[in-house]
Length: 263
Ligand SMILES: Cc1cc2nc3c(=O)[nH]c(=O)nc-3n(C[C@H](O)[C@H](O)[C@H](O)COP(=O)(O)OP(=O)(O)OC[C@H]3O[C@@H](n4cnc5c(N)ncnc54)[C@H](O)[C@@H]3O)c2cc1C
Image 1 (cartoon, rainbow, N blue to C red):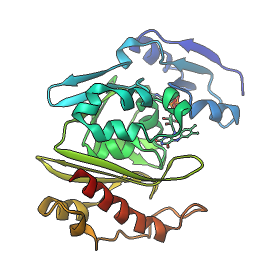
Image 2 (tube, rainbow, N blue to C red):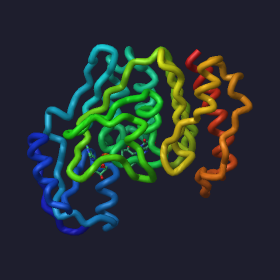
Image 3 (cartoon, rainbow, N blue to C red):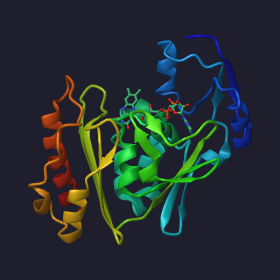
Image 4 (cartoon, protein in one colour):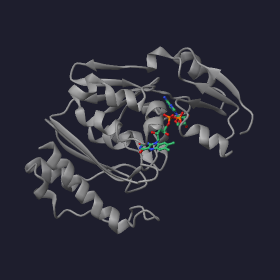
């Protein structure tokens, strides 16, 4: 690691103030950031720890939605009685992330700010049409994830929480990498009064929706209805774990399983 200063922020203003230094970096659970530093792939002058800011913690019900603070760990979302009752698919998804060590350290804020192409939360945030709250504004899910490890967050912007609207039915199906447990392909399907949303992670450079499946499922919410909808493999990932062709096939299989599980 390169040398850096460590600051444990006590409030959002304190943390935001520290980010005035262009080389300062936020740290949540450190699950991605610490290995990056160890490999000397980043050289921040200062690490600003978000772990002692009460406003970033906790899970609450807010009318027709569930609000999860940015520093909430995956294990907490998985165990939460509120999430299990309001959006059980979200609690189940959090329980599929990595291993117990990752789930006890990793946070929802760190996961979505990092926007790993194979991470699970981006699929949940997009399918559930959530809103990402920051210290400056609220960003709609469709506008938040902008590309490979890229988000709409600006300089000095801190994710404070995510607001997930309750839906009529939802399910997440993940075909995981047996070593890392990241998604080779993960498909989150959600049905609400506003329609059906299908979000795919792991298959491309960034989470994406499948409009043809959404329109078909809005007319007929059955696994059989989408059996012939194949997504184009042109822009899908192809690596030692799975070819683009295989990933395209998996999107259909996982989507059908998710719809069947919703029913
Ligand atoms: C072995 C292993 C297996 C994993 N498997 C999975 C998996 O199966 N599925 C999955 O989805 N993920 C997986 N992960 C990722 C993990 O779930 C973490 O969510 C992810 O690594 C981010 O970690 P973190 O929350 O500790 O954030 P950190 O590592 O602390 O931060 C990550 C990045 O986000 C920024 N950041 C953190 N918090 C905020 C905030 N509130 N506002 C703005 N920016 C912020 C940091 O500056 C940094 O750039 C895995 C990780 C490991 C190490």
